[in-house]
Length: 261
Image (cartoon, rainbow, N blue to C red; front, side):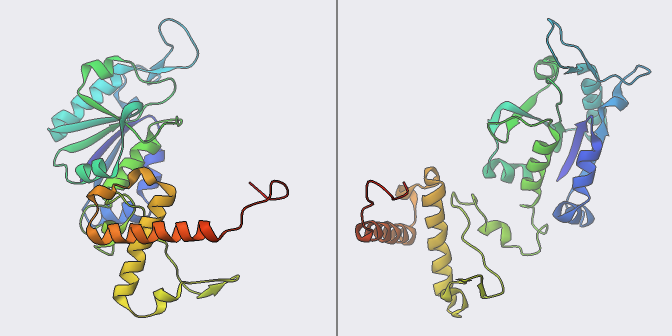
C-alpha cells in the first residue's frame, strides 16, 4: 500500500508513522508513506497556505492553489491516484472500506484540512472522495487520515505478526470481538473463565464465538442480522436470549423506593 499525505503539520503524521505496527509495515516494505508539507507548494516569501474567508467570518481557510500544485506534483510522480479528504460531510468509514483500501493498487492520497476548512474549489476541481470517521469534529484531517491508513494497513497480509489476528477482530464479520484475558489467572477477586484453561479447543472456540455474539447483542445490536447468520450462530444467539430471559425471571422486582434505577 502506498500513501501520500498532504498536510500543514507533517510532524503529526511522521511521529505516528514511526511507531508500532505502522513502522513495522514500512520496515517490511508492505507500506510506503510520504508526507508533504503544503507550504512547500506555495509561491510567496511567507509560504502562505491559508487566508481569510470571502464574505467575512472568523477563522482561516486553506488556500486551493498549494493543494492543486501538490496533486499535480503527485500525478507526475506517481501516476494514478485515489484522492481522499477526511470530512464530516463524507461517507462513513467502515471495515469494508478499510479492506478495499488495503487492496488498492492506486496511490492513496490524503488531503488534510485545517482551520475553517479547505477552499471549495478543491472539491469541484479535483476528483476527491470525502470520508468521515464519525459524527464529530476534530482539529484537523491528520488524525482521521492516520485512522484510515492504520485500519487499512493492518489488513495487508504480513503486516501483523499473527496472520489470523485481523480475521478475528471486531467488525470483520459484523460482530464485535470476544473478551480477552492473560495472566494472572485471578486478579482482585476476578478470575479468568475456567473454559479458557480447560484445554478443550472446541469448547474455547464455541465460547469465544458465543461471547462475540453476546457483546454485539449488548453493545451494538444494530450490527446483528439473525436472518443471515449461520445455523450454529443462530443457536448461540438463541442460547443467549434464553439466558437473559431466565435471568430476568429470577431477578426480584425492585421496590419503588430505595432501589437504584
